[in-house]
Amino acid sequence: MLQSVFPDMEYEYNRRFDTKDYNTAGFFDYTHASGHDYVKTMYQNVPIEFNVTMLEYENSDEEGTTSTFTFQGPWIVVRKGWLHSGKITVRPYKKKGLIGKLFGAKEVMTGDPVFDGTYQVYGDENTVHVFLDKNRRDRMVEISKKHSGVYYSFETDQIQVAYATGNILFKSRKIKDVSTVFSNQLNDLLDLI
Image (cartoon, rainbow, N blue to C red):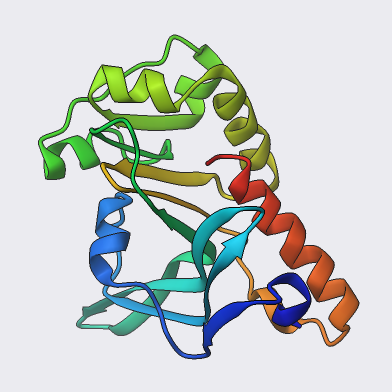
């Protein structure tokens, strides 16, 4: 199925990204990371790495252990040289101030009330304004209506984009259906690069 989307690819079934990639994207609320269907390829002339990622938080107390998925969905990384250097992290508006406290980063408002009410943005203002133009902000708000929001980060040589679909991508048995869903999800993510 993946070959129908990526004719020339490097593939590993049980590979996930390094935890530093998740942390760069502002994820700290997990205790276990797993992933599958790792792909490294060119897609629409963009060098990408992709996998389906599951981040799980395990909590133990006197009543026992409970596990909750904090993220489950497609994750894409583009590693290439950029003309701009800097760092930003964007995540759905959940825990105000958490990322800033962990990174020592400054929260930046974009001036877009819908976007600022949907997402938290941390980083330097110049980088935020370079990467979060109106089209990208509007697209992120649109995707957040379908999923649990977009996680977006840029740090000097890479952009990461992920969004939680809340389900496993390849659960359908119909190859054509899965290919269509997969291509649509990739295109949503690539729209933000």
